[in-house]
Image (tube, rainbow, N blue to C red):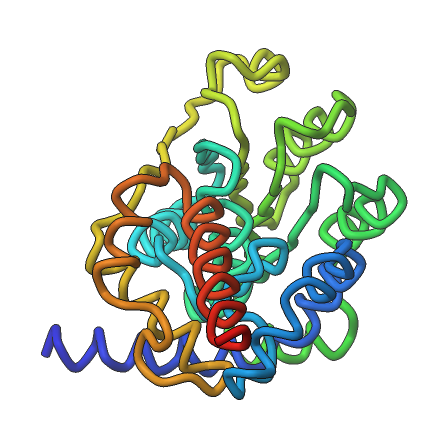
Amino acid sequence: MHIVSHQLLLYHEALARTTKLKKLHRRFQGRDNTAFKGVFSLYYEQLGWIESPFNPNKPDPRFILYDDLGREILSQASRESGRIFYVYGKIGMGKTTLGLWMSEVAEIYDLDSVLIHGGRLYDPEIIKEKLKLIIRGPSFFKWIISKLRRRSILRYIVIVDDVTEIPDRHLFESLVGLLELPSRHISICMLGNKKLNEWPFRDVFTNRSIIEYELKKPPKEKILQMIRSRIESVGGTEFHPLTLDEILMAIEEKETIRDILLELEKKVIEKTEGKSKS
């Protein structure tokens, strides 16, 4: 019974991802990928790829590495209101991808997700409108859906990416205020580059328990599967033109997922460039 339930959960997660993928990715189209594409396009075209599978500037929830942690957070947020989670890790470890993935599959856990971006994508006006929706409640259409689901209260998880790159103390004070709203089931998940005790706005959440997680490099088997999936998604086969040894060396030598992808991109360029000269 447990296996069947787990498989059903995976199916619904995949279904949820397909419905939100295009909308979420639009937020990342503004990132400067021009130079990356210009350098790499000549090489991936030779390989018959539709695009680079190793672009580290385009987070893609299809290639999630921390789905187990994401499920744990969403499960806890679904069971109990007022939970606060803080996920930290090195730049390039996959925090943004985790945040996108959780935002996509939250509805499977009977939660509406509100995704807030820090860093270059930080926009106070957009954030203000998102928080207003939580305070005012859903649109008429979403209210009907809520009734059909027999929800007695509104259920949200607010996901804040690049939290350590947001200098706005007022935002975090507003998030604390959300937790006090009546007829709301709200939890917060923040993702940043610093440990919780190094984050300057930790004091905003004084007297509130925060569950802290560190993102560490996943097992090499999981990274290998991610790399294979990336290559196959653009029209490649297995690890070609890379060898398994080359990939394992990159995984061993590099500390973050971003650095692994950049190293593999470099190797592909070297191989295709050498082939075109011979």
